[in-house]
Structures are given as C-alpha cells and as structure tokens.
Length: 256
Ligand SMILES: Cc1cc2nc3c(=O)[nH]c(=O)nc-3n(C[C@H](O)[C@H](O)[C@H](O)COP(=O)(O)O)c2cc1C
Image (cartoon, rainbow, N blue to C red):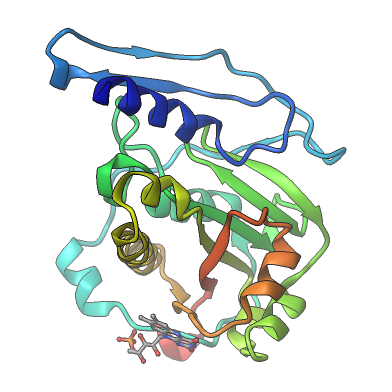
C-alpha cells in the first residue's frame, strides 16, 4: 500500500495546481525501494492555451557551468535592494528559475532538496523589464522548463504595495515569487510538514541568491508582505500560499 501511495503522490505532484485543460507533463515512477520495477514514464508534450492567454513560453536551456566557484559566490552573496535600469534577459531568468526549482535528475529531483521528494514549492515570475518577454505574471513549469502565462501587464508596483511598499520589488527588472502548497507535504508528514515547507523555501531562495551572484545580478529575499494581496495578484488558488518574494535586477556601477 505504501508503494501505491508513493506512486499516487508522484502523479499528483505532476498534475497539481493545474487550471489548464492540457499541459506538458512528465511523470517519473520510482518504485525501486520495492525492488520490483524502476523506470520512467514520459508523458506526451503538448503546447497549451492558458485561460485565454498566450501559449506557454519555452525557456532557453540552463547552463551547468559558471565562471565563478561556489565558494566565491558564497563569499560575494549579499542582499541587494537597488538595481540599474538595464533590463534582464530571458536566458538569465531561465537560469534563475532552474536554480530555484529546475529538474536536475531523470527521476524528477530538483535543484533544491525537498522532504520526501514531494515538491510543495511553485515559482512565479513577475516580469517587468525583460528582453524577449512581455510584462506579466508567469508560472514556472519545471518539468517542461516553460513559463505558463497567468496575467498580463506590469504588476511590479502593485506587488511592491502588497509588500509594504518595498521599492526593491518595484525597481527589479523582474521578480520571483516562491509559493507553496502545504498539503503536498502535510499529507505525508502531518503538521511537521509545515516546517519542512518553510525549510524548503529557504533552500530554493539560497539557490537563487547564489545563481544571481554568478549572473552578476542583485536580489534580496523578502518575507514582509500581505499574503492575501499577493495571492490576489498572482491569482493563486486557496491551497497555495506565497512564502517569499525575490526581486532581480542588474547591479549598479558601484555594486560591481
Ligand atoms: C526570512 C527572511 C525574511 C526577509 N525579509 C526581508 C524583507 O522583507 N525585506 C528586505 O529588504 N530584506 C529581507 N530579508 C533580507 C535580510 O534583511 C538580509 O538577509 C539581512 O539583512 C542580512 O544581509 P545579507 O543577506 O546581505 O547577508 C529577509 C531575509 C530572510 C532570511
């Protein structure tokens, strides 16, 4: 029964939180602990319509190498709240999204660890000043490495207002919002799962910090915001809660 449950949870992970009629999906079935079968089932890929918005946007492939060592990135990491007005690129955002929650294994594991591999986190991109990407809200789909449009228009100022007017959110060229569906983890771990989810958002956020250093971009983790207002802006379902906001922007001359 336990193994059926594992299988079931994994399917749910891939189907969760979908408002769309069709979408790209990939399901990794791991029953190796049973010692019976180990394999991967890869679902068909489909480009889809989202709430009448444009089709999913395919992101450039992430790079797996860097000019900077992990030690140097740790040494250089700082929370930066002011940025230059130069736009960021879709390739840079692709890299940051991958660092936050990208798939790094054929079994569906991700760049950040996850209790029980239940993957409660979602990542949203609030794009404002991005080359090759219209302003809007997008949801990251890790398995397909695509962006699903959620809302049109530049929502950075409204998001800043929802976060006590913090100017870094308004001034970042783009903003990541890390959200979570607690139920994915509490279904297995009960109330302790809440702690696990909070730990996971820290892991993902640190990945974004270090990736930003590597890309010579600035970011800051923001925890002070009105949950309900952020939920409204991102059109989150009741089951999903915002846990962190990370504006992203190019460094000023004096920050370099
Ligand atoms: C859980 C958490 C919440 C935070 N919330 C905010 C915030 O709302 N606004 C902000 O400007 N910085 C926020 N920060 C960033 C801290 O202020 C920052 O990490 C701290 O000043 C240390 O600086 P450093 O990150 O450069 O080492 C937050 C950091 C954490 C870990």
